[in-house]
Length: 174
Image 1 (cartoon, one colour):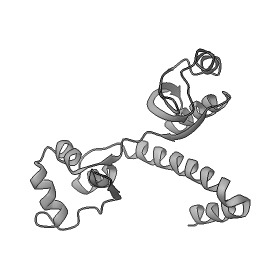
Image 2 (cartoon, rainbow, N blue to C red; image 1 turned 180 degrees about the horizontal axis):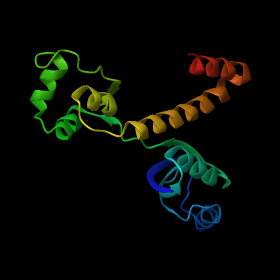
Image 3 (tube, rainbow, N blue to C red; image 1 turned 45 degrees about the vertical axis):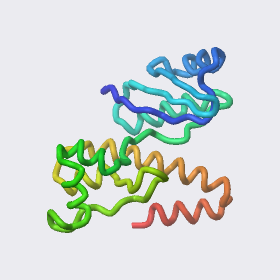
């Protein structure tokens, strides 16, 4: 058995004495919780046979407490130009040249989107793979899959059973 470290983003206030006690009783004695008025974070160091089982068992434990639901696993995968420069040990200008195709082979990964006030963002796992630097591909795959399941769950509430079944068909198509 190994110990896996990850953070769950939780809807609801996990910081009340009642909920902290309930979380502990539900098996979250391997977590530290922080909270705001509507969102909380659970930082876990969970023993399990594999990362997926560690994350799913933590999700089940948190969601067994009334008033709490897990929104996502915090992936730490979204990066800005500054983050990329720091992680690749390059200047910001050098990274901008890679992005523009003025340096390198012109195949720098496309951004995932934009954030207000922060410009474009990329997937670190895509950038790391492109740059040939070491990153934990298995952890990234597990976190993306779990977060995809949460996205399906949220969409299913709005789309109903038929829409959810159709989405699952598309998600599992070979």
